[in-house]
Amino acid sequence: MRRDFRWSDDGTLVREASNIWKRPDAFYDLGGRPHDAPDGYVLTESQAGVSPDGTLLAGRDGMPTKVTELSTGTVVGRQQVLQLRAWADDRRLVALGCAGTCGSEFHNGLVLVGVDGKDMVQLSVYRKNSLKPEAWQPVLTLR
Image (cartoon, rainbow, N blue to C red; front, side):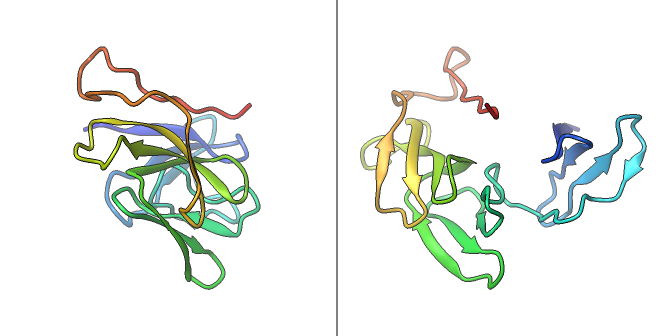
């Protein structure tokens, strides 16, 4: 069974991403011992997670995606993209968007999209078939 690990937001713990929907992630200290979730941890449904200012939550993959306000649970925007991958700032996200009319989910590329979903800027070329082994895969890191 596949197990994906990432650093916690503050870099002090290792987070094991749950592959079961709505099951919380598991956390470990640097010695591999189980650890409680950090203060302020929010269960997320997408790779983007919580906005940098901590007020918005990116929704799960699939068109349309959505962003909700954490304090109220109100949907504040929907985006015509496949996946919300990372926050660019408090009001824009890097997403995996479809080429053209989105006739194929495998013809995609990176876009910058506003929370409201209205403004979208293409950031990369669109892959013609993201399933081919030679297709590029986006990797986003903090700078």
